[in-house]
Image (cartoon, rainbow, N blue to C red; front, side, top):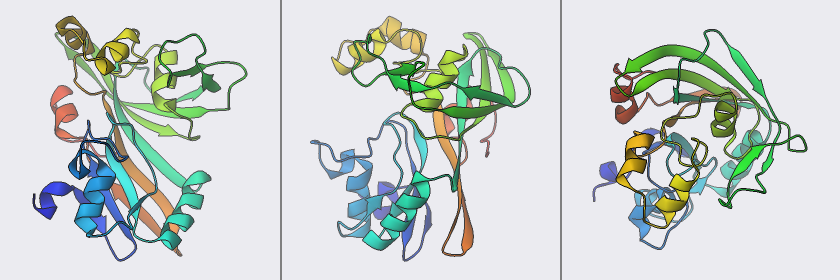
Length: 244
């Protein structure tokens, strides 16, 4: 495989590599070989094992991942992302017609103690503070239902935050197997028994969430990286690719 086929490179210099991860690719090493994970591909691309993921995305989420090429850069950027100095924007396709105008979702998050899905979190009063801002880009009416394309900005960084918050207000992300209303879809997926009816109800193979932009100040300059809405979601909403 050529280096161009390994990764969709958005930006690269001596310190960092920014890539546009496809949906369905895990970020961490897997047992299926180097090509089966983003970090494996990064190491093949770089030709050494020094690449370090600064941010991470769920397997089904597409979009921007920042890679540091040294321990020093990884430490600096890791501290930056752990604070409030980075603006992350996502594009999401959700069920239903989302209200017009900026929406602010404030709901604490913690482990879902009653779920059969071990990794599932939920809104709970004793959870960690979490806030997400969402703004309607456009509504989409298809034969399989009404949908909305959103510009989403999490102002905190909790696990599955965007997915939980949007489902909490009645607009789950299309294709979400955990928070889309039937967590059994996720259980059937991981056990290899996802049904054709499940696939029909999910509509999309991977959930419709895309990390579209990263903006931050580092080493005395502002950095902005963008990745337009990927082809599968652009096709779904019936438009040319959208940048946040």
